[in-house]
Image 1 (cartoon, rainbow, N blue to C red):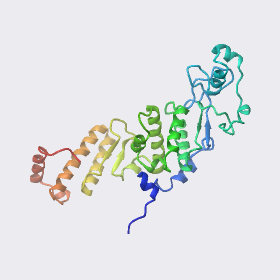
Image 2 (cartoon, rainbow, N blue to C red; image 1 turned 120 degrees about the vertical axis):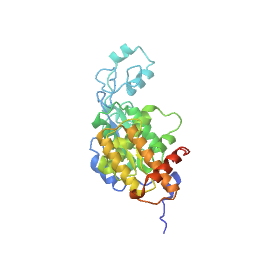
Image 3 (cartoon, rainbow, N blue to C red; image 1 turned 30 degrees about the vertical axis):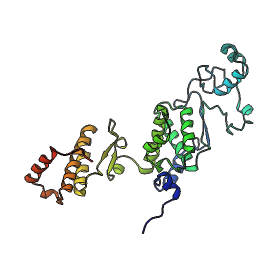
Image 4 (tube, one colour; image 1 turned 90 degrees about the horizontal axis):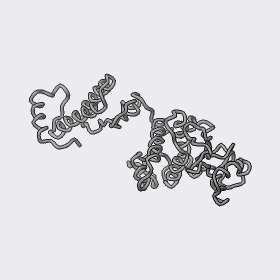
Length: 303
C-alpha cells in the first residue's frame, strides 16, 4: 500500500523533518531568544559591532559614517552636515520615541544594524533560527552580523518549507540565488547543522548506525565532510568497513586516509556484486583476490 505524500512537500522536493524536533526546539530555546524580534547591544561579542558615534546611543553603526541606521536617517534628512558636529549636537533616539513606528519591536528599537526580525517566518522555521542564533551566541563561534541573519530570514520566509531539514543544505544554497554572500552561506550552513544536531544527535552513538557519517559530528575536521558506506552492496562487508574505519579514526588516521580506505572497500564490494559472487568473508580466497586485482586494471571510477 503506497503512502500518501503531502502535495506541498512533493512539489518542492521536501523530506519531513525528524519527529519530535518541534518539542526539542521548544525545550531548548531560552526566553531571551524566544522572541519575534531579537535586539543586540553594540558590544555583544557575536552579534555586536562598532558603536554608533552619537554619545549614549548604544546602537551598532552600519556604514562608514559610524552612525547607526536611525541616526544615519536623521543625518541624511538634515542634509548630511559634518559628522563631528552632528554627532556632538544630536541626541540619542530612545525606545520611547521609536515605539510609535510600525517597524519598531515592542521592547526596543528598530535599528536594522542591531536587530533581527523573524516575524515573517513560519512558526517552526522561526524557532529554528532562534535556536541557531542562540547556539552561535553560546559557542562564540565568530561574528555573525544581524544584517546577515536578517538576509537569511528574508530568504527562508519566501520558501514554502516548514523546516530547514525539509531539504539538504546544498538545496538551500542552490535556491538562495546568484552569488549569495559567503557570510550568508556560512551562517545558513551553521544554522542547518545546529538544527540537524538537535534533531538527530551527534557523536558516535548517533553516527555509527548511519550509512553516511558526518565527520564534523564526530569531531573531525578537514576536506572531507562525510564517509559513505551506502554504496557497499553487502551488509556484512559494510559492517566490517564501519568497524574498521571507526577503530582507525580513533587511532588517529586522517579523514583523507579513511575516505580512501572506504572507497577501496566499496570498489571491492561492487566487484563482488557485479560478478554475482554472493559469499561471506570465509569464501574469499586467493583466486578471487587475483581476479579482483586483474579487474582493477580496467575498472572505472567507484560509483
